Amino acid sequence: MRILEIREATKPIASSIRNAYIDFSRMTVSLVAVITDVVRDGRRVVGYGFNSNGRYGQGGLIRERFRDRVLEADPQELLTDAGDNLDPRRIWALMMANEKPGGHGERSVAVGTLDMALWDTTAKIAGKPLFRMLAEEAGREPDDRVFVYAAGGYYHPCKDHTALRAEMRSYVERGYTVVKMKIGGASVDEDRRRIEQVLQEIDGAARLAVDANGRFDLETAIAYAHMLRDYPLFWYEEPGDPLDYALQAALAEVYPGPMATGENLFSHQDARNLLRYGGLRPDRDWLQFDCALSYGFVEYERMLDVIGRAGWSPRRCVPHGGHQMSLAIAAGLGLGGNESYPDLFQPYGGFPDGVTVEDGHVALPELPGIGFEGKSDLVSVMRTLAE
View: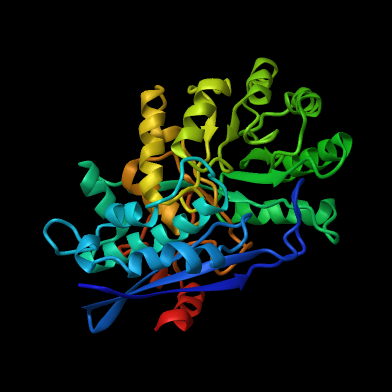
């Protein structure tokens, strides 16, 4: 059993949308294929991975550093003790050999992309859906259904209030019970009008979450908090810089509603510091760590351990990114849910064909691996890379 090749291609996911901090006019994503000599059902096993939106493709790091550490290793070092499958945890350790502590920036995205492809490969070799394989390892039954929310509401040069309302209404019509929109890219008064327009449109059929994408200083974050307290929001997301734990803690003193953060923290050490110093409240706040940006599932396991030691339930985790890898983790390990991009960042966002949202939840199909082969537009792009 061998890994024959690892390929990476940098793909565009450019769009005219923007949040409070960046626009997506030149956004890219790394698509990775892990090609093995294993055959299942008459087809060579190939595992796929990609990084979440908001961080650019990491082809340079993947090709120049991490890929070769896997390919140059003794093939036996990549296997389980039984030798019957690849061992993603051992491979992760090989990828991270000779790396200094800290530096959890773009490096974590490169490793997380490869890690996703390795878990997809491993589950396919085992002939199991990844969510079932993870649940079996954890000694639990996977969740039958997973909560998902619809992320959108970006700023766009052609999107007025009417278009924003129509977008949010479309999510509710597709079965979502929580929708999310961006704030912080306009004045507080204009964002108040946008929020009120959306709340009028969804009219109690769904809850609204808002996301500032780390834009605010403390004064602005508090000003928005005073405005947002007037509305029954699902959460107030990432008001300030992700590493400004003091801002987050100060905000918790003045904003009684739920808050969410963590998508731009990329290690278990960062997660631990957030819970130590960020003033977050385990009875109402949400953690959004994204395995595809934070060294992959191997590191995400460590994050879950940190969360548990701090007295938090994994049900307070709703990962960022809207990809099927986090969806599999949510079902397998009992997280609180997963982000979803019904229309954006395609073909990487969304669910396998035929999966529908019912009452804000989805059921995962019984597909080997992460389930990419069930999404026809995505797998067609993936197979051009490796098959």
